[in-house]
Length: 342
Image (cartoon, rainbow, N blue to C red; front, side):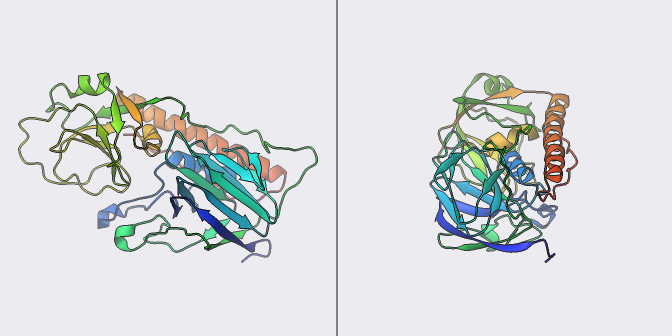
């Protein structure tokens, strides 16, 4: 450990309904039959890490529902993103989507999330945890649950030693943070054509015109939506095969399935659409009862929307690096090349 870094112990006081170690998932694991996994809302997880000077894919904590709280004996630099929630440090409210200084002997509480399903906690430094196939992301089917429990002690390696300035108050910094909106009762999700779109006669018009609702049968494998569907005709047997995140499947029953980051094969179901990459973070926040509508877009618009989201993250990384360098705070993030959108 470099001399400037130190080990910090964080004690978990409340662990929400489910809290897990999380990063952006596994690379190239699907060739071996293991889902990529990773944060359901990759945008929120990435921003949380960027705001504290970490790489986008650093290990953080994904929090679902209830109250999550922890205490620390040393100063920390944290950020909390994702669904709107109440975040306090020693009883005082602090802002989400910003770097937040936690003093020594501080207590942080994250509670009352609404409008979305998940919160993301990033802490400047490296959270020490096991990895499976190069990632800290859970993979319960392979005996790697990564669940965080009440009373657990998390180990953090960090160069952050506290930051105080007489002319700065909360919010600590003004940064160009791309914050998604969770306020709309009906979310709009952009989609592109799938391989069996033409076989499901009328599916384009149906998906564009009707409203769908996320059901309680949804899980980490995919969202199950209640709403009208059209079953493709004349396809015969479809051999199961790998499929991208965000694929729209129509199973034998009258429901719509949108596959998530823990999907495996198609199970032989037809695929009538794909959510664009830029829309995937919102799908990762959808909770039971959430209503949504779909908007067909072309490949060019889908790619450009993904490029724009990546440009915003890169701009934020650049601003954080410049700011932290100017005030001598640790920062380790590096821009990640934009990926093509489906």
